[in-house]
Image (cartoon, rainbow, N blue to C red):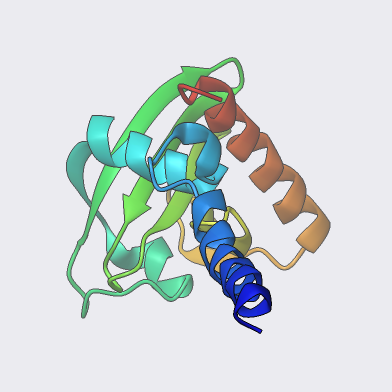
Length: 155
């Protein structure tokens, strides 16, 4: 019986250790999601700024009426100015993507998994309003997201 119990113990030990060996704790870019890499990129290379709360309040991002602290990157594209902002006001990282085109800002908030949450249109001389056309909002969000994914190092 002692011959039989030793291999069984070895089998149970191997079964307990093998799943742990499969995990990659090195933090390599291949092991991280695209959203996590985007968080790290914007956090490390973005500049600290404050964003006006008007449009962000409609997205559910508030700082009790005060400006919202963010880290952001901005670049000019062929069809307007693109900005990505990393927000951690709720103790959770999330993004606000926006671009300026034809006197209108289009804002999109998304979580760190890059799922669009809310979209807002903000005319230069008007008030912000939630975009109710989901097809337009999703198409513009995908365009803005693709712009930044293209520029992200280590894609």
